[in-house]
Amino acid sequence: MNPDTSNSADIFYEKYHQLVENSLQGIVILQNLKIVYSNKAFANITGYSIDELISFTPQQVDNLVHPEDRQLVWDNFRKRLAGFDVPTHYRFRGISKDNRTKILELYSQKTEYNGAPAIQGLILDITERIEAQKALEKSKYNYSLLINNTTDLIVKVDSEGKFLFVSPSYCKLFGKTEDQLLGKYFMPLVHEEDRKRTELAMEQLKKHPHTCYVEQRAMTKKGWRWLAWSDKAALDEEGNIINIIGSGRDIHEIKQTEKILKDRTKLIETILEYLPVGLSVHEIDSGKFAFMNEKLQEIYGWAEEDLPDIYSVFSKVYSDEKQKHLIANEVMSNLKNKNDVKMYWNDIEITTGNNEKKVISTKIIPLYDQNLLISTVLDLSERVRADNKLKSSLEEKEILLREIHHRVKNNLQTIMSLLDLQAEYVEDSKILEIFKSSQSRIRSMALIHEWLYKSEDLSKIRADEYLNNLIDYLGSTYQTDESEVNINTEVTDFLLNLDVAIPCGLIINELVSNSMKHAFNNSKKNKEIRILLQEKDYEQLILAVTDNGVGFPEIVNIDSLDTLGLQLVSMLVKQLGGTYSIYSERGTKVEIVFPKPVYLLNGYIE
Image (cartoon, rainbow, N blue to C red; front, side, top):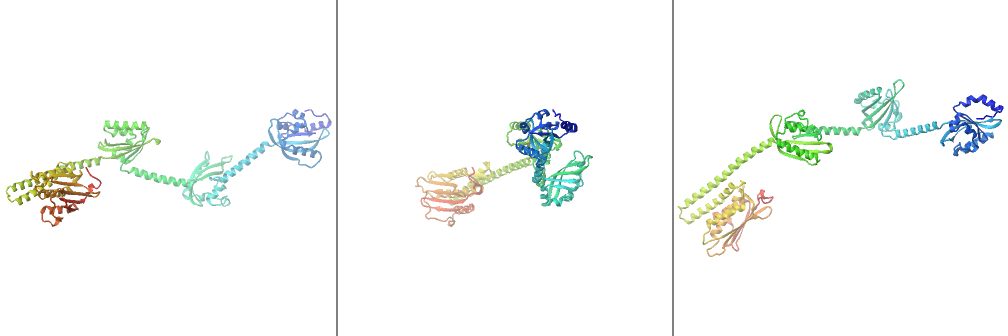
């Protein structure tokens, strides 16, 4: 700096040099739009050296002011020099050497420098302060925006628990105004059962890190609701609590859901624990059991602590080495390939912890996404014993029933033999015919017992086999060389039980024997009897015996006839629950329709 050597300059520098040079505030003197003096502080504000500033042209000085503020600054400069009353204090924006915009605060006054008018300015760089204020205002705005719009509950209480601040969300939840809450204690709003827990939690605020978390019920406008609070204490220099900031959230629905889940979990655990089926859950990778119910421990005869993993089950329970390796290999193969299949094994023999032999079935269900295997075990031992006992009992009954059929057949054959012997002493042809008819009837019944004795099913016989054998017998009994009759059958191969087979056999016996004896004369050619037994519809069977003989002279009612054989037919039709019809146009046809047995209603049983 090259100060003027005049007396006034000397006086200025003498008087103010030290004060001005070391001032933290920028000081500048302008004369004729040029800088004639600058202290260090002003040079620091602009970024230029003092020598550079002193050498500036008016244009360069003008460039130190932001373009938008130049008119304001220079108008005030000129007016002040002209003696007008203008503000001595205002703000404007300056441009530094590095082209940064700075906010400057100016205090100016008119002075003289080297005997000529000049403007002296005291300039403060308030950029950082303004930016800090803006940041603070923005922070306050954001804070206010957050507090006013957050659904979380924000409160501040003093060390005694009195409200210092409540957020709008808190007021809304509790149905109270800010004035109704400020200065009041928060604890009366807390459920009595939760106050002790709240007090203990807040004691933690006195210890590092001076935070606490508590869940409590509070009386809101909706009634008692669960709230969760995270609190932080503010301390003074001596470590005493000044106030507490609390951030809360309504967790009532979460608590309700937790209770429902807890109750359901307890219910499921109870159900699983008392299932009549053994159940376990173990990890796929480690094999360790995560759960094992009491029934499984009962089946295996080992306590849960004796079976820590699936490998211990294989070593202690599975006695058959071959079966053990077969199951283990299948499980490992499916797990390795992550096959999403349920694995079943039946009739597995195991040895329990009590050295008892049992038979079980087991199912394994993999849950790969949870790294778990669910295993169920069903104890089949009692059922196997019952099945064996039943099988033994059935075998005994089968033997007994087969023996009964055999003896009935033998007894009937004995009766036939006795009748045959007795017939040798009878000379009356009519009586001999009665003997012969009786033998035929007995034979039709004996055939049934003979077939049942030979059959695997001791309660039913094949209709076609039985009737064909009966027809063979009737043919051999009644046919002679002079009266040869062709007997044709059309019989569906379903099964007949005793209740149907005996009446049908006796009916066919009576009708065929009647046709053989009365329907044909010796001159008749191509004599034929046709026998049909088949399904009429879903609910009925039809039995028909037709001959091409002379026929009845007129349609008759079997019930009105006094012959034993035809009366027997009528009785047997009623026994079957059926009806009969007689047709006599070209020979005779007797057609019987009766209900299908229940066991045949779903179709033929072959």
